[in-house]
Length: 154
Length: 472
Image (cartoon, rainbow over all chains, first blue to last red; front, side, top):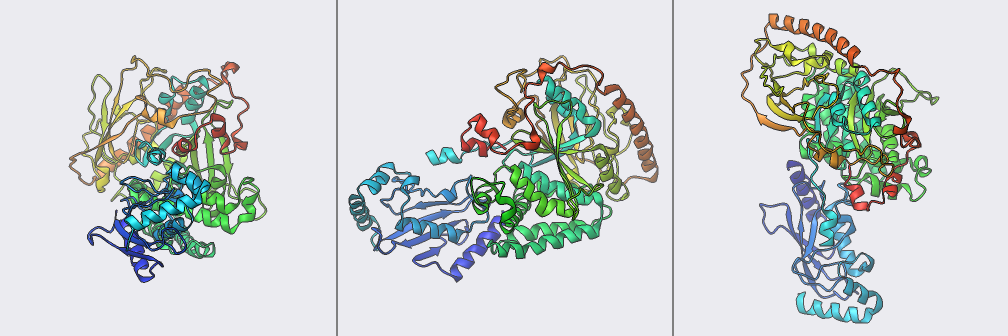
């Protein structure tokens, strides 16, 4: 556990020193370095532009030997995020058999941010939204924008 | 939900790195198996007296070699060599930066170098690897140490990409490392093994030998050697070897009799921490007996039998992690009714509870002759089987006292006696080589581990990727 804490503390300090563009990171509880709150601005040019998305990053006690989990607390219309109260984000790099202990949290967060600009419908958790994204992009953009306005307003 | 099921993997039983135990346990484990296995396991103790199990958590091969590397350095007992290794590990920082694995040096490489330096300080006399074993059994440090070997292997492959490209027809070296080396809990495959050997193990002057316990023809485990080479590409002989016992899907560590003896010679010369203790024998009608205290010294005495040690000695040890009791249920012993050749002499006290030899054998792990099964082996099935030992640790209150000069004299005498008994027992139990085996038992003569390719085993089995990854 000491190993995990040491590394997480270092990564948190590094991120605070060199913040990621369009993201604000904080600890909901200073006492628990394993739970991070992340506010991501909807990337420019994406249907999420203008919205702010609240994400929760949970780092297991076995970190970095087990992957963190990332979930959207703000509802989002996206093929790679479960449309339920969990809002789990499906990232290949966070799967147990793909996770690399040498990956760092800033890379995970940048990847998540990138996924807002470019969804990956082939690796989707929401099949319906993925199909719409591929077959009827106009409708997808309309829905994503509407949800952003409704749930992710600044 | 799908993600949850993909990520789920059973929690493998057993310690991360087990105690060194007699290979006679393997004979018992395979007593009901196909005759190929029976013969191969029976032949084991003559050359390889001991083995050590690794947890089947996907890291077994990597962890086995990382642990074996430390253990071999301790066995050699050369402090300057160990410090050179520490320096070599520290120097890998440059390699990591060169291939773009930044900032991770202190997370992964430094603890390994630190442990090497720390252990070098204990040489030439040491604790028989007890401290290293304890560290390798703590989750985080064990992962860290194991991962340092993976990370260096990955960096090495990336910096020598041209040497490995030929072995990877389907992908480039970077992709291979990202998929097969850098993730945790991904089984060691052949290319990874080769790279790990070249980058770290052979460079440290150690050869690797993988001994295949499978259905291939033969009466002994089939060796595959990754030798230390000189500048001309010839094998440098005479150096130490780390041995892996490979059963398809899983690696354990295997030891030659003389290596075990050499390890304990170094520990013997340090009376402060190397004190033998007499076990307190508690014999019941079910052949229960217990050994208490530091029993590593008995490593020299594979023929050691508990009844030899009914001495009124108090168990002694200065190391707290040695004062534990482990309880084993050994396999139903339906083979030749001989007591185990090599009862345990571990650094922890133990209680063996062997079931009566007339016990109904559990379902055989290996159906006798089923060509469809081939060499596929399920470590999960084996470890979950009631015939495999399931160690449990219990604290024990032992009253430790340093040994007297007189007691140490006894120790030496019993050691000599044990060696005599060992050779007698070995004579009795050697398989009769003149006896012809039924060739029909060798159902998979085509299997050649020397040209075995990782991945093909799985393709054959048609297993989904997720279960493949969880298999080791």
